Amino acid sequence: MKKNKEKIAIIGGGISGIATSVYLIEKGYKVDIYESKKNLGGRAGSINKDEKSIDIGQHVFLPSYKNFIEILEKLSSTKYLSIGKKLKIVIQENSKKYHLKSNVSIYPLNLIFSVLNYKNLKFYERLKIIFALYKLSKLDNHKSKISLESWLKKNNQNNEMIKKFWEIICIPAFNSKLNKIPINHAVNLFKTMIFNYKKNIGICFFKKPFSEILSENYRNYIKKNNSNLFLGEKIVNIHYSKKKYLLEGKNQNLKYDKVILATNISNAINLGGLNSKKIKLSTDGIINIYFWFDKKVIDEDFISFSNSKLEWIFSDNKFRSKNKEFRIVISLSAVGNLIKLSNEKLISDYEKTLRKELNISQKTKTIKSLLIRSPKATQTQTGYKDLNQKNKKMYYVGDWTIKDLPNTMETAVLSSKKLVEKYFK
Ligand SMILES: Cc1cc2nc3c(=O)[nH]c(=O)nc-3n(C[C@H](O)[C@H](O)[C@H](O)COP(=O)(O)OP(=O)(O)OC[C@H]3O[C@@H](n4cnc5c(N)ncnc54)[C@H](O)[C@@H]3O)c2cc1C
Image (tube, rainbow, N blue to C red; front, side, top):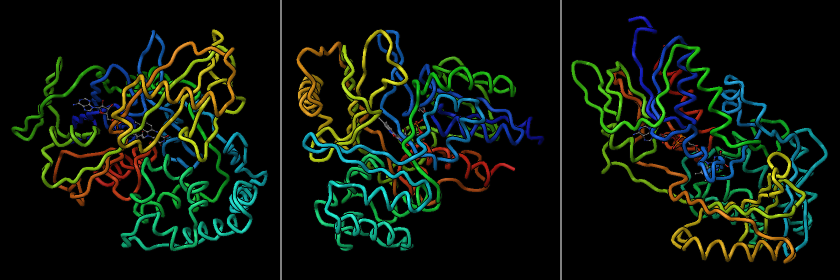
C-alpha cells in the first residue's frame, strides 16, 4: 500500500499528537487528527476567559528542548518563543534577592559560575553543589532505585543546599517532591537538558497563549499537506473489524488502517484496550494562580522563592501588558493535598503572601484573579514495558509513554519522534 493511501488517525491535539502528525507528514503520509477540545495544545494549551485566551499554566522550557523547538520551527511559530540565552534566575528569600547567573556563555563554565555567584549559600556549600552536579553528569546507574533526595544526602548536600538550590530547580522540572524522583529520572533529565546539550541555557517561555501560537499556523500546515484537523471532536469508541479501525466520534465515523493514541493515560486505557490492572498510575497536580494588578509589581520576567510558599512567579510585562493590567502568575508544582482547598482560600492566602513578599502597597489594586487547577498535570505509569509493538496497528504516544524522563513538552515530542522513526517507514 502506498504511504498516502494508508489512512492514519491521530487522537489528541496536544503536543505529542501535533508532533506525530508533523513527522508522519514529512514521511509522506496524510493524517486525520482529532482533538476533543475546541483548541490545540492539550495540557500546554489555553482556556478562554472573558474572551481572552490564557494558558492553563505557566510553561517554561530550555533551549535544549531541541525537538520541541524544531516542531515549532516547522510550523513557523518560533517567533512567539522567548528563548533565554543566558542563565539568569533571581531567587528571593526574606525580601533579599540572590542571583543564579553567569556572564560566561561557555559550558560548563556557565553552570559553575552561576552556582559560585549564588550567595544565598555559603561558599563551601556552593562548591559542594558543583561537585554533586559533576557527579550527576558522570552517573550512569540506571538500575538504582534510590530517590534524588537520598542521593543528594549521600553526596554531602545538606538541608540548606537541598532547599535553596535543588528543590527550586527540580520540583517544577519534575512536578514532584525530591523524595519521589527516581535518581535515574534525574540523571536522564539533567543529561538531556544540560550535560549532553553542552551549550548555554536560559529560561524560555511563550510570548502569547500556546493555543494561539499553534492555531493558525498548524491549521495551514495540515491543510497544505492534504490532511484534516477535527477540533471539538471527541472519539468515544474505537471498533476493529475487517482489518480497519472505525473511530466513533460526535460527528465523524471514519475508518482507518492505523490509529495513534496521543491522549492522556486514562483515555488511552479506555480507547486503546490497555489493561488497567497492569498499569500502576501516579499523578501529581499543578496550580496556577493569576493576578492582574493596576500597576507593575515586578521588573523581572520571573522570580523564584526560597523559604516561601510562592515557589515561582512569572510576569508578562514585556509581552502582554495592554489595558494597563499587569499580570503575575504564581505557579505551584507537586501540590499534593493543596489541590483540595477552595479557590477562595487559595487566592486569598496567596495574594496576601504575594503582596508581602513583593512589598506591594495597598494603593496597588488587584483588578481580578483566576485560579486554574491541573490535578493530573503529570502522569506516569509503570507496568507496560513496551507499549508499542511491531505487527500492531494501534500505537501510543505522549509524555507518559517515555518512562525514564519526566513529563515535559520535550518528552511529548520525543515520544512522537521515536514512534515514527521505529514504526513508520
Ligand atoms: C499546568 C501545567 C504546567 C506545566 N508546565 C510545564 C513546563 O513548564 N514545561 C514543560 O516542559 N512541561 C510542562 N507541563 C507538562 C506538559 O504540558 C506536558 O508534558 C505536555 O503538554 C504533554 O503533551 P501530550 O501531547 O503528551 O499530552 P496532552 O497535552 O495531555 O494531550 C492529549 C490530548 O488528547 C486530547 N484527547 C484526550 N482524549 C481524547 C479523545 N477521546 N478524543 C479526542 N481528543 C482527546 C486531550 O484533549 C489533549 O488535548 C505542564 C503541564 C501542566 C498541566
